[in-house]
Length: 601
Image (cartoon, rainbow, N blue to C red; front, side, top):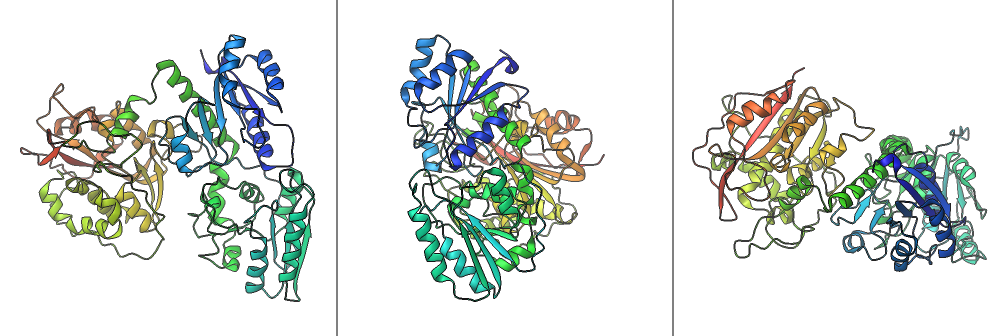
């Protein structure tokens, strides 16, 4: 079955004054533009309504804009009863709006076969759960604000923790003269008569103390065009929500981003997808006046990441993977499975494989470590002093561990919890990658770095700590390299430095993997890789189940380098190794090697 023959149905609830409906309307309209799937859109408020549409269209896949409040008629019987009664089975996919990591990790296929969460920060540890970015509403023409007085705006229903009162306090703290514009409509769910909205408005007015601070509050429910016009009329839009556990991402900032105006936020998990914007747009890190001065620069990249073309690609990529899983009856592609298996090492006492949702690259079998958001500070880092005769294409053995010991110590100092979970002998790989990426990155002004297989990689976390511009790709974070390269926004010759620690041996088509790296490197750019290595290896030898192969110097010099004719090794390799010194699972004896190349044409 080709994808252009697949009929899809996107199900939304009937129009209500709520963000969930607007989300569904946007995604449903977007899917109808797909050239690869024949999607239809419907709005249903009952199981009977849905069944009538289902009988008429006979879709192969149904995506529900599901929220328990707006779609109470959706339950476990939906996916089981319809195929049995109608005779044409479908795949049922539900949206998880109020998503958080634990919920995603524990989601099952009782009600829906698969789930889609509109949360780009989610870790993809559950093979039933996919994620997308945030579809931004179509931007309106920004209204020119000729008012010399700053206008600070915000909007939202009067649910608990929205922090409207805190906006009044912050503006009065930083400004002597300003206009505050608040839109607090009555909510269909929970505040129909507007008592809470009017109560918040009253409290905001009571807090006003400066004579030249004006406050305007209205309770109208704006349609899409009115809301974007309101937001684009402000100097800045601000949202100061309380921090709340077990909540999804707020849709309010989607509209604020689409307005094309600067944006300020609180340090709330509801804005977790925005907390790493640089310069920071969080009021805990920057003054409101500074955020205004920085303009849209910190959020400009999101106009591309969350545009319609990218979000449609994400949905089509998800559907392609879902149908591939069902056609092959596999939960994961073999290469991705091998890569995820390498996230842990076998226990010497128990060879039984642990849960694939746990443990990071070269970690001991133990509880999962979650990386904290490391605050960007001025951290001193000095690459080691290499003599001129030291090759960057080398064996990463005990001599390398001694040479790079200051870098290993740096990683231990800044990431003690993570590195404590790692197999100590394997940390030489991350130390080498970090040192070499910084060393070669000096050739560029603000180098753009791509990290392949970056999840819980201490070298990648260190590069971020050092304030490098790093883009992550990893099957747990977002995509593998083969998927990433099909993304509409990905262009050739984009990156100055590409790093990849111990990934290539888990990739079935390693020549294509290298060709993709070559494609993405700028001329003059570098790729820094490490791999599992044993020069005595012959095809058919016993190797760990997580690997497709060990590498040899003849393989690297011949087959691999021939696959990337635009690149060369940065210096003569020193890959001789008669006595490998790494033991994997007390069974496999091999070592690690580095591969450092430069694109020259």
